[in-house]
Image 1 (cartoon, rainbow, N blue to C red):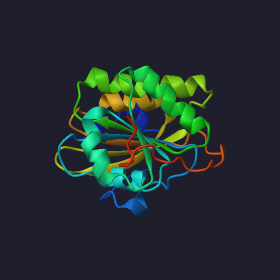
Image 2: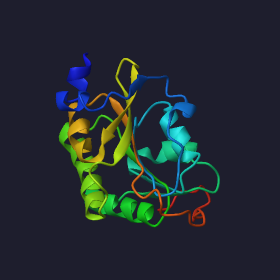
Image 3: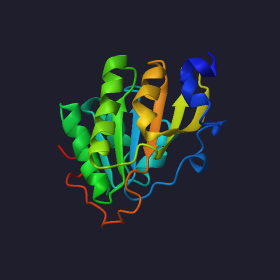
Image 4: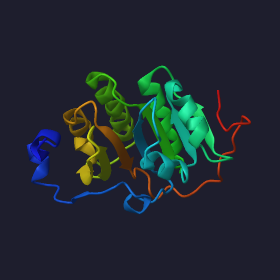
Length: 200
């Protein structure tokens, strides 16, 4: 598969900073306050390194219930996690509120859903961040892993995010890092409200 099939042609000309990698944690952005991580995760299978890397550092994890077992297995002791709402826009709003308040947030979503659903989930987050006055030119980091295991990391503009997600084949796993509110400061860490760290 060529790069032009994965990334829109108008994006290639403006984003030369892409690199193939093995998804080593050192190659991923550092988790910081006000950051929002969107991570696609197989319902069955080993947790990819973006998940491990994010869960080791984020304050809040919001996950689809289909991923509850993977979250329970991977969530560090004392971390806070809660299931997503059945409404994608309500979940997006909650993620953005946490990030705007200075928490670092990981939004975990099942991989390989229908393309329309996948794009809608990301668009809901984009809409909520846009309503919170996040600049369209804000750079976001994207890590894409194809079905044959090829991984690529590159930078994109926030306002191109939904279109770029839509351009990826549905069997590509995506991890997206949006440093939406980097200056929000670091609040005290949330405490788990259930014995296993999972809320709900």
